Length: 265
Image 1: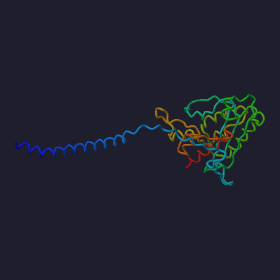
Image 2: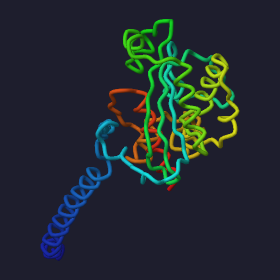
Image 3: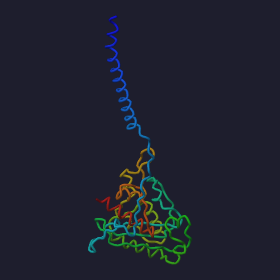
Image 4: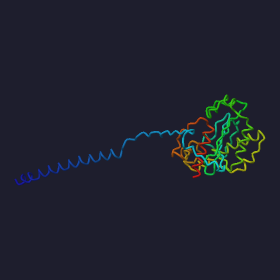
């Protein structure tokens, strides 16, 4: 008969204990749910990088005027051809890769002082006997009709380039080896000397871009960047950049000169 009073005492304690266990269970369940929501967030779709656009004819990034009395130092140049795409647009060249010369139809350059500021700029369209291929026109926007109407004689343009080069100390281009090989081929064809160009020091922005190592292959090896990619990396901290232009020769010369200024810093 003494068990009944004992049960009466233990029953309330058991009910209290069950209530505490129930509340603890609810609290623990809430904590686990919050943890799950925090740790296991759904994967979000990565947005593509924002497209950046610059205009070589209006952007202040391409304006750097040297004092008139500054001596010439760098000669930054670019060539456009009749029937092949320019190698620097591919950005995948190996150092020992050879490219067959194509007739030169445009020669553009800037003369810079030692700090990289611009002293002068020239571009010359060259008249050739064969038509420009549609693939080349799609790249540099020069048509056969424009070449025939506005083109100059090859000999006079090359002679002018040699005169300017004789005042400078360093030749600069993006994929310099390609452009020099083309120039040497044309100089030989018209009987003009190339020893003056061969005596100058050289700087290739494509080679410098590879050393920076920001563009890599799937295997992790540093690769040659396009000119626009190098500019985007140096100025905008992203290689994806769209460059607007009216004339590709001037576009490439201004891009290359701008890259050189950053590489000199």
